Length: 73
Image (cartoon, rainbow, N blue to C red; front, side):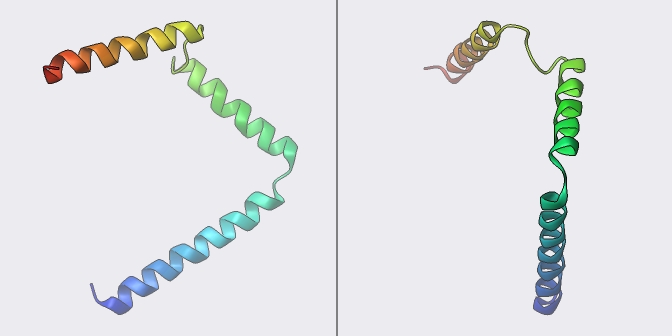
């Protein structure tokens, strides 16, 4: 890949980023709210969230203990 190609590639992605920023600013609060709720609903349906925050904390601590034992510390 030539330097000119790299520069052109970066410039194209900068333009994409600029257009996405403009589109995001034009998106209404209602649409953003619906999008957020959709993402959270999907995460819940996939079981990515625990129903209880203490369960999540406990699982994190258990993972740290496992990693500590694996590293031999």
